[in-house]
Image (cartoon, rainbow, N blue to C red; front, side, top):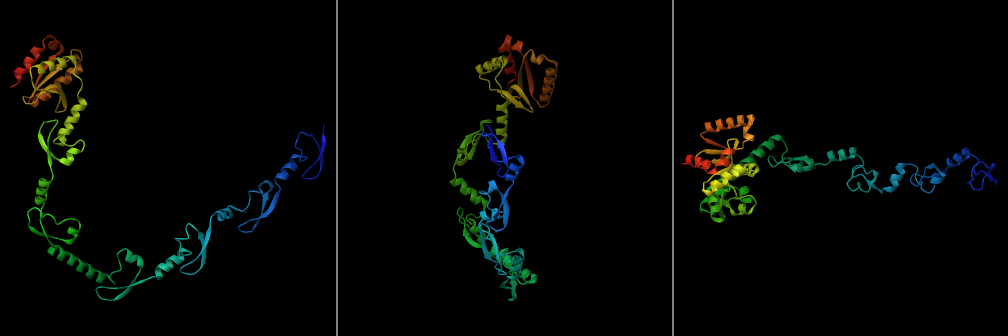
Length: 345
């Protein structure tokens, strides 16, 4: 069933269904109603502007500038140079004293402070900013050179004369400048007295190097720190680190030699770093090297060439190389160790 409606835009009668929201007779009238604007006045500049009907509740300002001005609080202030009243934001107005950079520069050039030259007694004017930078003491470059030379002479006299001090270690009297005493100096006459004081007052702890087993001394405060007091030098620390990184678990034939050497109480070094190489067993006091070669790996051609170069390099440096194959070690470990013991002095 159809009903008769009146268009809200043009007033024309039209027929439509009751289940539809029939407000306009056509799409043109609907768009015209949506584009219909109402005239309002801006709350900031009081300028008239048009706004759509559905934006009446939200639209209050004619432009973004007026909306931003409404959000911020503007404060009026008088320029300290020209007296002109200017408006600025509340967050900036506390630091702003002049209406423009022109007034700022004019103010900086107009302000002067009267100073008296300590050399010639003449009065002169100088900017406050120059005084903050440490300038403005003298009226001219000539007076400045004279004044700086006099100050240098005073410093030299103080350095030559100094203040009398007594050494806390030897009791000797010596002289130091006031600046050195102000920094905490003037307690000892020389570095020898200072080190002697350290030896007496600072406790040292006896330590044993974990690499070369040499006895050395470190300060008690250093030993308490983690990592100090373990090695006598940086060289021993580096060698120990390299050895720990490359030490691997011994193979079966190496373990057999290790057990036999331990049974006979023979001192040796396992996986010893030597002149760029790493040997299985080393006896540094007698310069003897023992190698346990596996049958398969050391039977390869390129490994045999590498072993030959290694033996030649170590032999040039005075080391004796003893090589034992895996079959020889499995057949008789004691015979291999006997051969090593024969070469030991």
